[in-house]
Image (cartoon, rainbow, N blue to C red):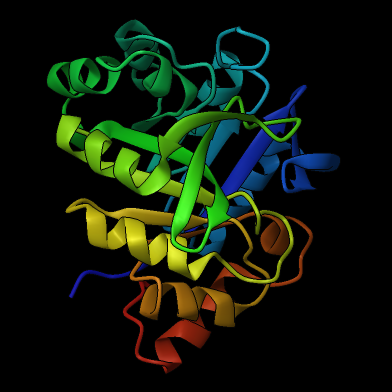
Length: 255
């Protein structure tokens, strides 16, 4: 059985890691390079770096910071924010990223995921989806979601995940916007729906507050990896302790 992954996430704005609630009211969480070094040493399985203002401000991802982080870590490193073309993907990979996450641009350019996957391989293309619940069993995709709550588009999130996987995405990063930053638990229904709709790994994001939430998203949400920010950045829980908790409950993790 493949091990489940625990992944700290850096939402970066103005050179600092920040975290809010439902993408609003951001507060400072530290220096991204220092945090990357600490999480690498603590046993994180991967890192995700999202330049949350790159797409809303229509600018490129902070390349120098990506390079600095890549020099500090020896685990897979995903970079997203402001990725608009296969050339942007190439630049991030050459700067030290192992994977590149595409969100808004994938919605606005239907061919981007396929083109990037064909050029660089599906294994390094992650499609990030920010989804907000409309009704029972229905979630709407939002773009430009890094700050300000995002922009709703007329696309069903589960259907979109399936289309992206078929286009060549090697992984889906699904964020339940209603739960994000609340530390009250992942949107298990959303995560499970996406996991059942695709044949590629699914990373759950939004709502982690306790190790129990990660256990639930693996068992009930059928996720392959759990992304978390607040509980690690602000010292509520340590990665090693979370993994020990999971291992004691027969969740396969890398200790």
